Length: 525
Image 1: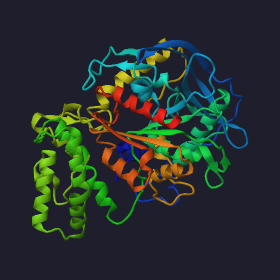
Image 2 (image 1 turned 90 degrees about the vertical axis):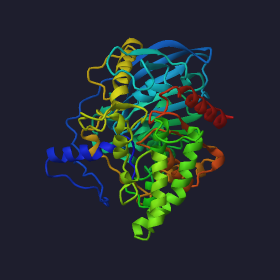
Image 3 (image 1 turned 45 degrees about the vertical axis):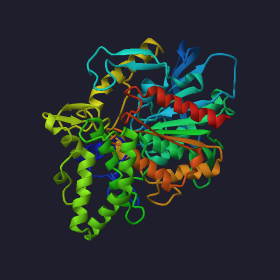
Image 4 (image 1 turned 135 degrees about the vertical axis):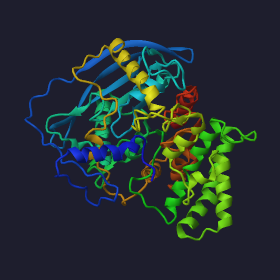
């Protein structure tokens, strides 16, 4: 079962949390065999009057596609409330509004990353915001200072106002007043509270009539898939009618399978088969296979066709004990040709894990490839085993992103806060995350949520973007989930980029940003 990016570390975090937590933890109702016990929510302490929300306002300008774009930046807090109008949380966000004549119909895009537990700084500083990180190399950069910050020539601010959302528990967003972590840390709870923030933002900025878009990366793709339902509301979901519809949804680093999904018979084998194309793409980029003149897209499509047909069928036969020896040998030969690994690497089950592949594909060079971007490498020997800190991709680009963000926040936006900013927060949050859903069948794909939203809203358009070299949220399973949910093909954009999980790294930012512009144009005409 493929989990969202960053959930590769869930077992590590959960086991550590269980070892340190009191024995009194309770599994969620109807929990599957892989459920992480939920910590009992911390009861709210004494409720004191809240100070006025902090706001920091600055004015700047950038140039996008040769046009100067002046803008106002608003960084600050927004309080969230329960149904009794009592404050329960504070979301810190970053709003960028294009300067000029007031236009209540100018599009607005709400942007967030994933985790669960991640702030929005990655999309903020990577491709969407007006400023971006400067690394000394796009791939395998140095991970020690100094790091740079520069105007972002690919920013979407020329066509849409931008709002970067840090969900409660990330960034500077936190529980306040009558709130508890249980109000926020779950699929539905997260969607409800982020929806309330969007509702409050639209009212404060008088933008109810604006075309609206959401963009979510990694677990953020789950949030973006669920949000249309939460924003509309209803008696069976959220219990309140917000009546907010979206013009477009952008998913990247996409993962749409439910956490405890079972699916139709043979579904597990199909999911395993669809892991193959990302492994093969990695072998292609590192020159470990005979390309035979095939570019990455042609090669990717060839492997996808094999994975969905011959390979998936062989896995089903192997699981049933009916795979003949000659067919097994033929499948192993194809696997070896596509991945550059010997047939013995796939074992009796005809499979290899992403992690094992990452350690073996360049073992002859003494290197391990990154899970978050398999173009990145570090020495195979000496790893500390941390799935993020020791990942050849995350370990290299995270320091630059975090440094650039803090330089921008202090130097450009003049933000002064008295507590640390949580770039990604796993402690407490991830083990407590509630995966149970309200009003949907257990194990329903998040792609189905999005398909329902597209049925309700006949103008809603969706962009699903993936990186060939992403070994955490593969392109092929995401696109298969979209197909199985029967989303209207004429309102879908499926795009792949020569990059990894953060698919805008490696000279692909301009192409991705232009694809988003196309979505915005088509959704607002």
